[in-house]
Image (cartoon, rainbow, N blue to C red):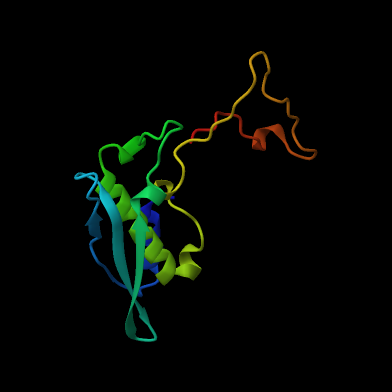
Length: 143
């Protein structure tokens, strides 16, 4: 899912009382990179406005390839990406029953590596008994 899905789920409760803009700490070693982001989400609980805050660290969320280089939108939109991760964490805290433990795509690894030895092919698989071919999906897994 994406952050917009989280926002929609929170909105549908009619208890979402606002979302603050991210507050960033700047990384002194990388002038154009955030060190952390913090977001507060507000929810009406029994008529009272309550705050739910999450702080995330760039080094724990930034998506990198096998060589340690930033990937995807993390290359040129580091603040935006980290801010969305902090907002997702705050929304999960405030709307646990509505969102659960689902992670946004911004919070997840960018790719899944599958390695095979030279000359080796992917393992053969057969459909599970009882499945109809028209209900099966064939395609390529993309991270």
